[in-house]
Length: 320
Image (tube, rainbow, N blue to C red; front, side, top):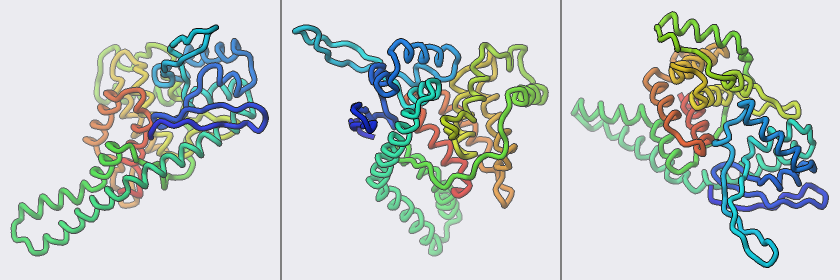
């Protein structure tokens, strides 16, 4: 998504310049204050508590931008902190503001528009990739070489992976055709018991699964978080993807973070009867899960939304 600025009008006199960048929206502290009609000290306190309680990672939701301000007759260049949509929504939830709901709907619709535009630009390249694979597959009928057929078969089998990689490179991956609401709501104590099962089955150090802080509880709670009665993540795929991402990135345990994250990911999918297709095939193979977990661990905080889309596209049953 290219950098862009849109004007948000609350319906009253308040107009806010909203910055769109890195697949999300960004507002400064002053703009959030204007949006919710609260004192700056109140908004600051809520933001401090959000990060202190581990509800969100500050490094993943805050970005500093150089901004020129007029002070007296001088132009002063200062680094201003901007907060992304996740942080804005969390503040809105705490101040219980209807304005927060209106802004979330507006921002989400705008983001969808940008995503669709970006996808349309790259759709031609994706179609060419698929057509090339189909053409090569058809041509195998005239080949005698078993090795050639094997190579082309592998290429065809990995068509989805190639599409996802192409979408990743061009930041054009979509979240679409996801399942209905999850039937299982993850609970902290049951998740801890699942981690104990993992330790008993595969072994681990004394530090394996040892919680360093409250961030694991926050990761669990975030999956079923609601705002104004509406769940932030409304499908099994979205919930599972965010669960895997949060546990990997929060480093909640003294040892075994990636193994625990991968285990709870498939455990959660299984709880929601989503781990297998109708044909009994795993929605994600062991090697793919290991690779995906490592990629998440190595990813930058600002790549979060893109990583979530990669996970969702990797397990979407319609892609199997």
